Each structure stands twice: as C-alpha cells, then as structure tokens.
Length: 308
Image 1 (tube, rainbow, N blue to C red):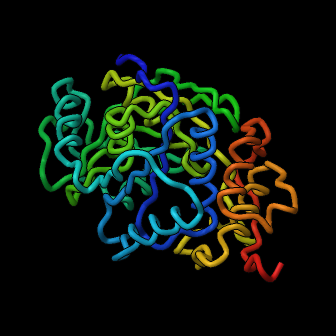
Image 2 (image 1 turned 90 degrees about the horizontal axis):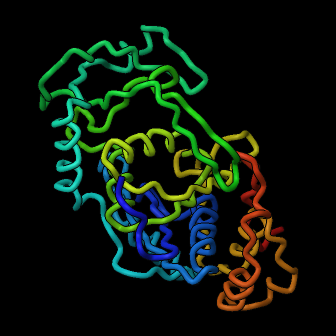
C-alpha cells in the first residue's frame, strides 16, 4: 500500500458538468471546502467529465463561476478527467496483469433476469468470469472477493461490506470504452494526494468499491465524510434531472447561509446581511463536522431565498 500523502489535509470537490451548480451540489462544495480549509488544508476542484452524452456544453465553466461567486476559491489547477485516459488505462493494465479483470457482454436486462437482488440492488452473478481476454467491444469488470471492506465514516458511522456477496464484480470500463467513475476517482484521488473525501451520502455505497480498488492497486485510502443529500419534497435528490434550479449568483450570501443551516452549523441571522467574505470567515471559524446531521437525506425547500 502506498504511504499517506505528505500534505496534512487535502480535500476536493468533484462535480459532473451535467448542468449548472444547484443547492445540493453547493452544499457538498461548501462542506468539502470548510472541512479542508478550516484546518489550513488545500482544496481542489476536479471535473468528472467522463460521460459526454450526459454533459451540458458550458456547464463546467458555469460551475466554476458559481463557486467563485460564493467565495469558494480552489488551490491548484482544475483537473478534467476527460484528459486522464492514459492514467486510467495504466491502472487497468496493472489489474489485468494480476488477472483481476475480465470482459463482460451482459446487458442490464441479462443481470436483472438472473434475479440476484441484495439491499444494494442487482448483484452481478459472474456470468462472464471465465473470459480471459479483454475485448474492445465489451465492458470490463474487476473480480471481487469476500474480504470485509470496512471504514468509519465521519458522519454516517461504521460501514462494512463484502463485495462478492453484496454487489458482485463491478464495471470499471464501459462497453463504449469510457472509464467508469469507480476507477477514475480512485486513480485521481491518489494522484492528487487527497487525504479526505467529503461528498454526498448518495455515494456512500460506492466507497467500499473504491477502497477495494485502492487495495488492489496499492494506493492510500483517504478519510471519508458523507454528508446528507438535499432532496425535494417527493424524496428525490436535487439534480438537473429532477428539475432543480441553479443557485442564484445574485444572492450568494442567502444561499451560503441556507447551506450552513442545512449542514447543522447554526449560522446567526445577522449573517444574511453580511458579505460573502464575512460568511466564509464565520463558517471557517465555526466549522464543526460533529454537528452534521447523521442522515443520508434531508428535504430542502427550493423556494428562492428572497421569498422565504
């Protein structure tokens, strides 16, 4: 296993450019920023632009402008995963040399028809496990086993999984040749020396898969903190797909104060009349990860802040 990064604290925010920044994404950005910068750490921004069909032209630049408008300034150059295919290919090759990956031609319909359901969803039954060559027209899965993957999340508590029985072998490169999130995020977190991952609890079940890949590749495992996800009144995660509105760049203070309240930080009412810099200073001085609600989802009223 690789050694821990020398930097004491290095966090990151890694949005997918599928649309403008909305409140739920701003909450994740703010939490990751405060968790790193309140301890004199570095905070990076990485665009997870690995899925062109889902991306919206200009969304990456819109996200960066929104972060700046809310006083969330990043250290170092913004990284784009679409420019990192060689690094992902190198990691895939390392796994191939250890006979840890194989080609899979199964469709979602095939997997669903197998009827192996767990609490985490359909489990891949290993139909193609005996394939020995990596075909360019097939997806690539990594072989899992029954080792216990465990970690102590700083918000959600102790988590343990056995991937083979609960998830099965999972995809790390898609049939269309695009690298899957699970592999790309592991490679980039290690390469950038990330010491802590702060993100939404909707990604909590991905973490054991990522820790498993870290173990297979001999990479450092960062600390994890999964914050509650903001949902609509119907229980859907706020997203472009569910019609969430972009954050109002004309009212960053109100949005920041709402985000701090969502994160359990209890900002004083007087902050609504302050500047972005003053809100950021207060938040850095008072950030308390222990105050985060230990929930996976929390409803949020998207009524514009000025109307509340």
